[in-house]
Image (tube, rainbow, N blue to C red; front, top):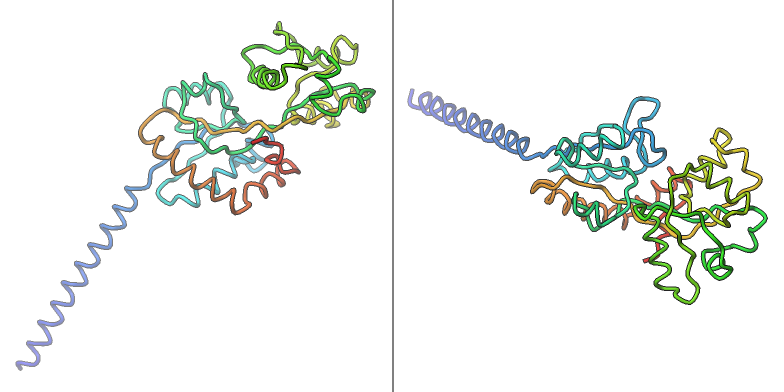
Length: 285
């Protein structure tokens, strides 16, 4: 009889302990769930191959895939992706509608005033010059254009490309690029002016040249046999974050994670997948 009572007591104690452990376990899961911070990510929806919505309706592109790889490295965060227009992305970041935005964005002082820009880049934009095919041997690089006194299509001082040429000229005061401020013009004008020999080169983004000229469906594919492209350098691209304490913290976590992806070779692998080349090799440190 005593043994039976003892067994009942032991069973009751075990039951209480099991319930307590179960409650604690559920509490831990609840706390863990509460500690996962959502980062609302906006990306341009048609900037192929940087950021876009694919045929399945999913967020895709080089920068999007880098962020998805970062998401896997940061269990304390959950990244939620939204494809949108360039204008909505910037307005949404300023208002706090979005925490983070990617659009193949270069660093500028103006953007740094408005947004948090992490120290670690996410990608690169290759820039260079569209020239006449007849001048391929004459202009093999930016130094050739400068030394020959080649005239480039005017650039808007508000454009980040203006700063790139200014930086080059500071380092090459003996043979600077002739830089003139632009009035409004269409890209078609720039290509036509080069062909008409009004200018010798158009400071162009490599991706834009490939899409506009080399692509059979490009808007200016009719110039494919008359124009050529000379790459200059890679300009780092960065995610832009809404200024807040939460996003400051995420920015630090992002920097660590993207550096790991770089060291692992993931960034180069994704670059070759989406750009058919390693865009990071064009960056001049």
